[in-house]
Image (tube, rainbow, N blue to C red; front, top):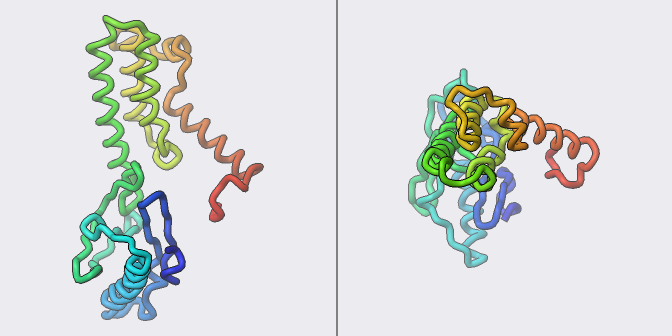
Length: 224
């Protein structure tokens, strides 16, 4: 499938495919009045190649779930809209999208993903509030690792540089797991439970990633 289009690079995972290309590669008439239409026509032409490949291989595409996004710097707004269609069905433009569990925004601001993670963690904290008086800390720690830590750890290399809000929720969870007051100092509690702070999880994942980049390059995608 990745050979169907010469202008798109593909990211594939199971039955999920994302096509990526710089806009400058899709039009020969940059900064002209026809630029928007040129880019739209070029993308539609390449999309038709992908659709033809799918049809030839007896695979179906859920066009209703297909979206497109224009990435740009936060300071630079893109003031045009592309007119993309597959089988005469309009493809909607979105500002954020759930990409394999990671909420990606058009300006690569991770606030939407952090908000999603914070909402899920708040529900776990509500569970801790109801349970911490009735079950031991060891059982709460199992719940923490399966329902709390898993959300913190997932894709933290992308958004972990801005995790103050998540750290506050983590401290609430730790206090409840140890049945301490709402304003108890948490450093001893983290040591008691033998768990890492979210900032430390980010640092650990960053160091592991650097080690892989430096010494075990064969385990990384080629673009690294």
